[in-house]
Length: 154
Image 1 (tube, rainbow, N blue to C red):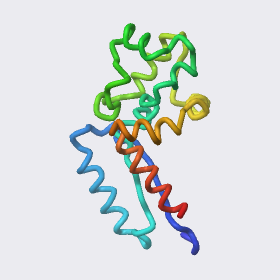
Image 2: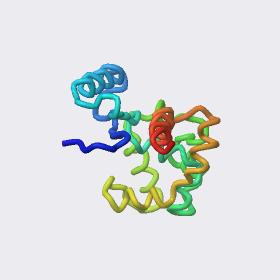
Image 3: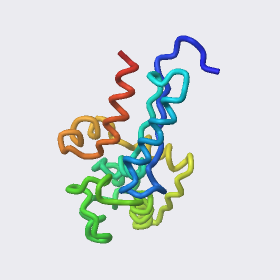
Image 4: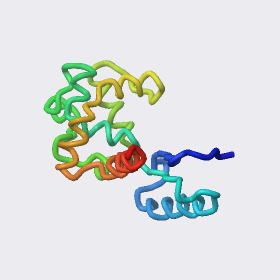
């Protein structure tokens, strides 16, 4: 039962394991489900394309904070991923695999568990994502999510 006084329910989920070409169909199913609720105007479900890990990959300093060896240049040399230029939401269908391969370069593992998530969250440069990556016109689903959060803080 929903109690009075809440501003909004905000949800977030990955598009993966669905395919990129199914994005609109998937979002439409979510919208239809929301419309069947008592408070459809107070529910926002956001979809990270393809996974939330795409947002992490967009942080230019994240991996170097995890391990100093993991510079953009080293990652590109070892794995062929040019993380500076590409939009990870558009480039990678399974960003978790990319993060795992980057972690492996430093002898680390990424298992998508709570500890790994906290480690990444502690090292993300949100200011860089919010200002610089936005100027680069990347990770649109991140900014849709942030906009939703900002709407409730007003």
